[in-house]
Image (cartoon, rainbow, N blue to C red; front, side, top):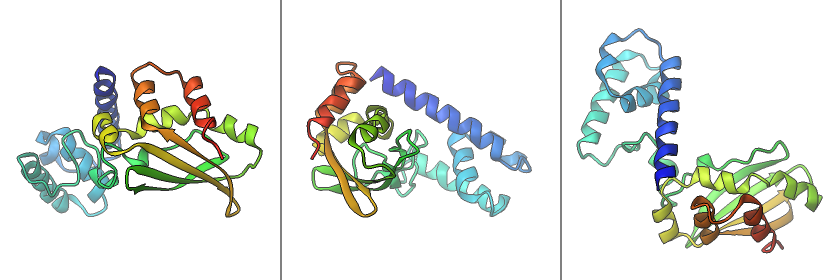
Length: 197
């Protein structure tokens, strides 16, 4: 739990720092707004000028006081990316690979279906590209408890030229054990390999 708080805090700080770097700096009235307002203004309305930015800031302040129509929650994450999958932000699911990229992430009942494309078809090389699989899932899980309550597994299909190369499953229990430090990244990957078809 403490690890998640640290990750969320550092992610919010990084986002705030980056938002400050990309802002126009022409509107001094927004300097009193909190960090979430600055992030939203920079991400959503940087091309629309300061008038829209001031309105957006007002909307966010209202939302923080109870309006649930705001797509950003109090920690700055975009809920619209994870509303279909409780506790999971599919836009954050990314492999550190030049050979494998994620094409889609969708919920299917109590599972998450991930379709990825691969430039390689050799299983050994493919598994080498998947070494960051545990870390990738950990980055995408924004609320472990909500995710574990709703989802049993993340089912992957890896295609090459519209033909299936491999499919495998990542069980939610393994993700929780990995996050708690009870399962190493190597053991996690071995578990995943055992489900491959």
